[in-house]
Length: 312
Image 1 (cartoon, rainbow, N blue to C red):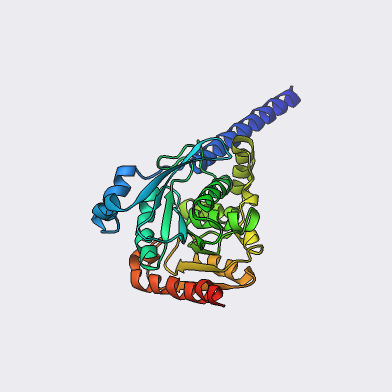
Image 2 (cartoon, one colour; image 1 turned 30 degrees about the horizontal axis):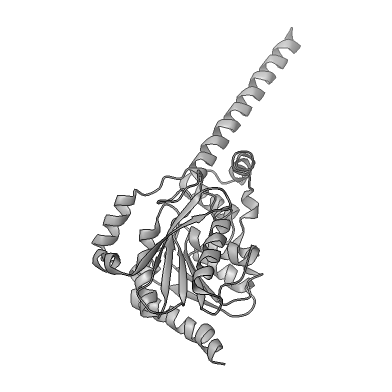
């Protein structure tokens, strides 16, 4: 009789633990896969108010709308902005919860630096398709499709750069180091170096949990539900394969994605590279807080690694 009670209690406990684990795994992966995005109208009004989006300029700018087929099976919406008579182009990759309107602040900077630009919405953001956010894993294949489309328009002789912010920066590095390295330069603003470390950092920051168990559980459920592993989303590993110049940018005040992550990637990058750490700026705010110094940093990087190379 006593043995039966022990077995029953053990069975109940096992079932309860399994149920709790399943619930926790679903909750965590839901937050990752379906992270709450900023409302498109909120982004638009925020950028207008901050004078980073000039609606009159945008409406009058020569542009071409792009609808690109993702290899993942959905449409990617982009805009090719052409204020200048040049083929030289920069593709801008926005951060998680944002959309292509957030990228227009960089469009105006690159116009001053002599480039046309392509802004696009990542999967599940803005006007693009896709059901989940994967922090660069599936997004890198979308970026590859964007790059191929842009190259087909501007030709092989034109200078092509890719500028990413936050998740967009991680996506840029993953594309460059694990799929292709066909752009002439890359700029990675506040990218995470390793997704498992980033998830662990966020969990520690937002909860009392101090073990790696939540990350392992999240990984199991992500593999089951979205078909990829947290451990495989590692821009730091990808960076070691990038031959083109990379400019790493971060703000020292960033406590969401720590600046040490950009420093880690700078250290392992072979060949031409630069690192700029701004004193001011929270996450993804380096340009907003330091616009003149930011632009000068990019200008000097281009002069050193892009224009000098062409002139030699």
